[in-house]
Image: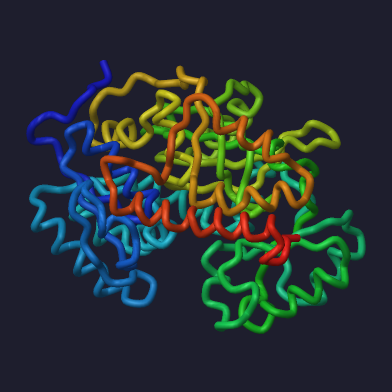
Length: 412
């Protein structure tokens, strides 16, 4: 029988990243009676202002790897025993993979999970594995120069997009570069695509070029899951994206749990095929031209959208913890479907753009806020992070009103 609460003497957990994503994971584990702390190298993240456990500021594992390892070893010693570590951001997934030998002496985690997560570290590797294991992908090319991109564009069906092999790569572009920090750019013709790529080529020439999967944001879905030892699926659900930020190419801002056996099956086949272990989110899109489910990206960690799983009845973090410490786990599927999960800091700013483009009306938007809602970043039991969310949403709403009355220019 799967335990409902932590027992005395069970290991504590270190959640690596206390952005709201990791903070929500801390909250879920704390409610199960687990002793949880967080670590992060960014002091602006919500966990440092939260009522859900203590968070520690650590060295940046990318820029100061040795100092980070020493910090983590000392933290394990202070917590006592051998804590579980669960990364909730790519920077810590990568760090754990680079320092697996040192970290395994002090922390509980799945060495198999780290190995397969490393294999999914770049878009190039993700798409190669997907193609090998039956998960369809859009037409894709890996480019290292403008000439490579020209060859792709010559036969491509536009619109097309270009994205870095790893999401963080464009974070390091120079200040003032309009692509700095973006996940991708998309264009309707070859000339524009090449002009955008010229902004990143001197700094990060390696990239992925793709044809766009046809369909709006409501053609996208996320498979949220956790796999245990031996790639045994111990929890999963599927959510349907209603909106995303930014429009068409962003992450879900409002989703709802659904039953979609096809998506669950193709994603499960893929993850079992690569012997996956651990928490994983797979974002896919059902192409409106042919109905084929195609891969957008794999996030081999706890993600923003993964927060929706607990409201659907699948406590991914808890199941992962139980598996790591050797407790029995009965597989769990979604049981609650009468709700929508909202990321307010994404959804409120993007709403005027849906209206401006004629995709949705305000009446249709208000209708989606009727009924039962679950929030990623609104929690009356944790008011300081919530206050920051509300402040940002108020700014976005005020801007929308000013545009409606003509004081600010309309969004494209």
